[in-house]
Length: 188
Image (cartoon, rainbow, N blue to C red; front, side):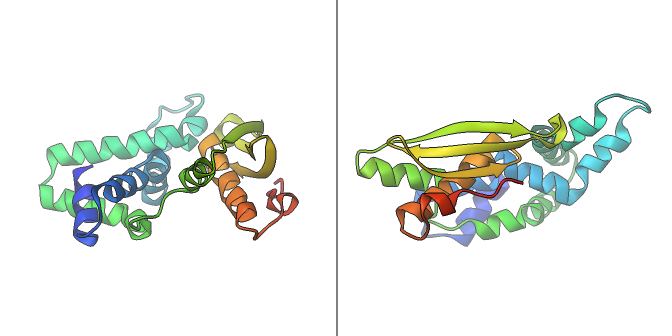
């Protein structure tokens, strides 16, 4: 999204190109676009627009991938039909929390863990432990191991989110802030 890239460059004029690319990726990834959809009430509008009695509407409206796709479609339609300054302002406002969290040099937990263990010639592996819940509210549980040693587990509404949570726990273990047993997130 051009607007997000321009806003990141305005906010961080001295940031290296690589940092800007990482920040942009994080600001407009699937999870961020789905969060924008939820904050904007788009899942409710999807439900309202469905034909009466249609099956699976709840599952569709609650699906993170669908929410992200709807956000992108709304932005694309606005880009084609509305004055550019209005669309740019709306995008900056909609992605405001994600833009505020974007900091040069800060990577997501999985990337940070991968870089840390690779510097030592080690390897992090993620294993899906289990999934539970209905299709529209699935919860994923993932374990991360480094060189075969389990370090942490995490849960989330997507496999990626559970991996990120597990990576955060593993980073805490490697930094000595937690033991592997403590790093296991409680099962919900």
